Image 1 (cartoon, helix red, strand yellow):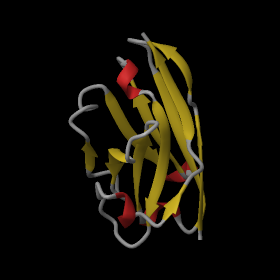
Image 2 (image 1 turned 60 degrees about the horizontal axis):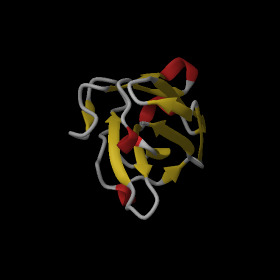
Image 3 (image 1 turned 90 degrees about the vertical axis):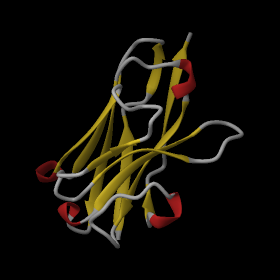
Image 4 (image 1 turned 45 degrees about the horizontal axis):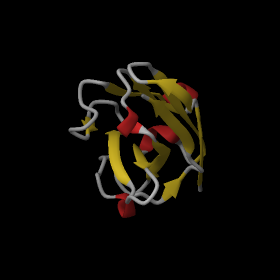
Length: 125
């Protein structure tokens, strides 16, 4: 079992920054991949970024590449998503997810088996 808790969301103006955190408990954190997804009202959940268990591999959606940075501190059982140059279209509920069946990230939500409750990010224009 893995429990995930996101934090760090909020309201920010366009061009601003936020750092999301995903704290994990349960199964040994360093053995699985973690992804960030987001879901805006009326839209499907979409992949934002992912990081492998060893931090050697990261992946980003084209829409956030160059603006967002994912990182993890296995000693703190935490994954971060640093979001810079935020745009109104980044507004969504952001979820972190754990993929305990593989050490590699994946862009498909159904391939993750544990999810956090989500944190709201709102970017005003």
